[in-house]
Image 1 (cartoon, one colour):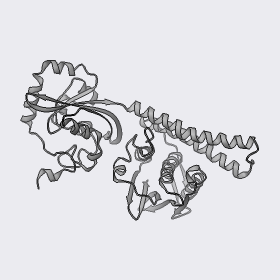
Image 2 (spheres, one colour):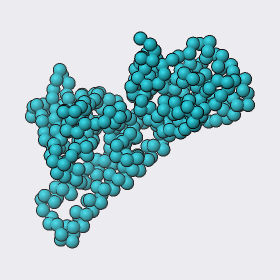
Image 3 (spheres, helix red, strand yellow):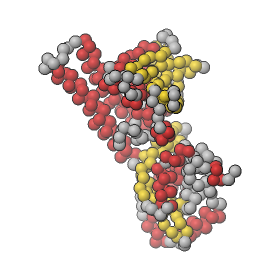
Image 4 (cartoon, helix red, strand yellow):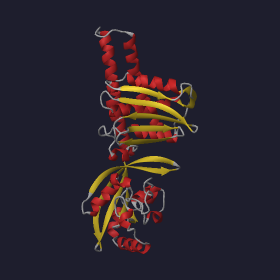
Length: 374
């Protein structure tokens, strides 16, 4: 089998150690150029034709927490610890997931002679936990001694992206709920709507979702800082899911859509953080309702298999492959710029705090099912 057949995307070719050192020596002779790169506070790497690091500026080791020697010969995803950089034998850029990687795309564009800037969300593994990096990548093609290289510059834009997502969440979701709440209360005051038990329940549901959306953002920020404290309790799963589905069935998202409950046992209990699980399953229900066409069904359920609790949320729609590949990345969304945090939050909280895992299946004829296994 040729190397070309062992890649799902970019070229798999790797350089030997001598080639890397020769390239490095050639670059180090460009003293003014090197001095200029070393003034940059951002991480700067120079990549050869095989996308491997042959030089990094003085800022790189400190920003990455590894030595300059350890950076040499690796590709950017391997340097940063991307979870997909080991999916294929020839490393970063050769896996199926790399097709949707903005960092790899930026390098390939530069190799064709064009400079570019791309925003990239990369999932890395650090300290046994998966973390999302929000990065801005600049790539510029250069030539040294007749050989092509790419200057690859990286900036952490996590604060910018997080602020963008939070602002959009508050200005969109929270403001919408608050406006709806004010509308109903105003109608009651004006006598347009009666202060009936049904209306009290509707207003309560809106206020509860509004409060939980705010608390969810607060919890996610604390979780990412490692400051979130669990509050475990034992509760009956059927009652928990019934309350949750009833809440969302009364929301605006469920207009002309049905939610049904599919629970194996009405007595089964679980001991976990009820609020975090509520927001996790709630996010999946919300996403399913948004994806579901009118008059279709969203199914919410639970099974106990081999000592594990498996919660699931199903709808009849199928996600495009491009969406499936990026689904759990922070800031990724199909709902518009700055609105991607739901599925990232589900995965982050479940796997880092609830001692579980999240996965999904999406295919023609079966629709899409998300699973939360605890």
